Image (cartoon, rainbow, N blue to C red; front, side):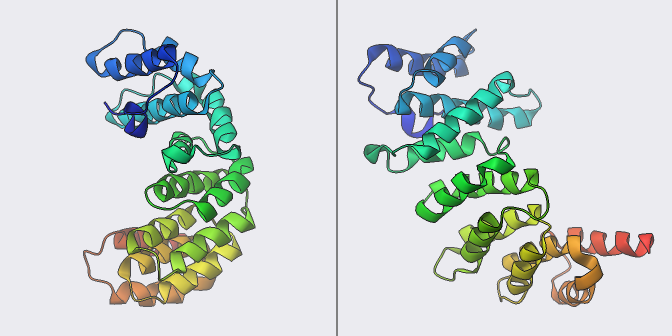
Length: 247
């Protein structure tokens, strides 16, 4: 397994380093890494807490193989500690990896109340940290009532429309907006569908599937211009066909 940056981090407390090493051994079927995880999570040290958050993220990734996250019972506590990390002063030597660990840890657990913290992260992070922030933003929007947090929606839209950003980042921001159903998100989605990049068009179209009563003609025109095997195009076509069936 990997703990990303924290695998190589030099802790000034041997006991904390030993707990980190216990987590690394868990890939070799260490019978109980949970105690080390909880000591790190509850240590009050930013580097130790982030190590625990990275381990929780690792277990979340492993859960996709059907085994579940054995630490799910601590998800609420993980969320609280991730918030603590995001509110605090970053570790200069970590170069954003501390915030990345916090954001990835809550990618499946962020709540509507986390919108301001995630928005602030999106405004300040760069590089690989953006991926964690965008993933957490998508979950946060999913948890929000409609209309969603306007600043978070606006920030994702601004990043998706920013031509100076890598297309990969713009597309992930645009896809995160698909968790929003507000008129604000729809307005941004219309702008995305007018861009030349197919990935951005399709991401915008996914947002508009929640607004077929007002944007159906636009979606039909878009689908007609896309290659038959374009990724995600079938999702749009299915939404249009289901709407026909319900009419």
